[in-house]
Image (cartoon, rainbow, N blue to C red; front, side, top):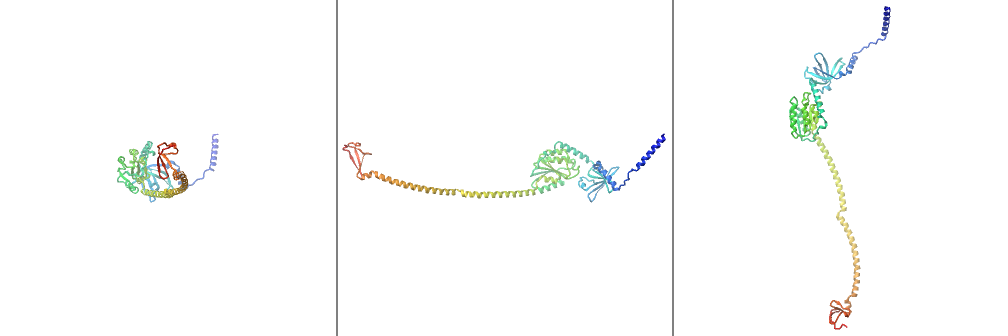
Length: 422
């Protein structure tokens, strides 16, 4: 029984295997390019390989005429070919000087199809040991930021027209000459006060702080803190915490121009204004005399036009006032009034003459009446006037015997005495 079942099972297995053979997959043949491209895809899909930090020794460093850099990165057990494209090579702040230098490189792993080998495509490169400096830098940056030393509302405005500019930098460095050249070109009116200090090495932070404190005791309007470019280690003096707090506490605006455009230090974050280079710092702290002259010329032109327009309006107003004065001048008014007076005088004269004529007629009538009533006329006709003292006698009862009387005749008078009053 067992043997029969075993033979039956063997038959079924053989039958099934024969059936499966009918559906076996077709064999796929790849070209070298296809296989390489397939491997490339695997590399590019691996996120770990797209952001890799590698530590190793540099060998066979070579920069081609195209600007690309080729070298090998190795340790005791393995090597990897490495490439830095020209666009990234231009930004390198550090380049190995001799084979065997230990570096820390960041980039991605990919496949060089033409060579059929994988390579390390480097984006940044720094000497070994700077990784710890970078960590220290980030920690200090975060600490000071949390304390508010980088806050924008703590920044001081720069003076528009500084009379005195203080400079803290090396007295022998190219940065100082760059700054002075820019200041002379842009704004030669300003006075420059140099407080020299070391800008690299262990003693540099203390010297920079002393130089700043010296300038803070002088009446400068703005301070430029500067040095030329260099590696992270070269610029490390400007990442000093005490220096950062000195800059923050400064009552005078401070402009930093440390390194190149891609370089950032703690001092840059604390300063009132950060410039990408020492020359740019000099430009930011001063106005451009050529631009000032242009603006002054423009303002002069504008003011000239305003004055000309105002003069034109004033002249027109004067003409109008002169015309009004001509018509409202006192002598014109007086002349007009004189004419009116003459007219009234003529009317008054006519009235006076008319009244005088009337008065003359009345006088003539009165004269005739007076002549008719004149005692002299009566006397001329032979009548006489008798007066007793000053009283005219008109009745005999007015006199008594022996009264003296005066008899007034037409010509002369007679004195008499009353001898009979009957």
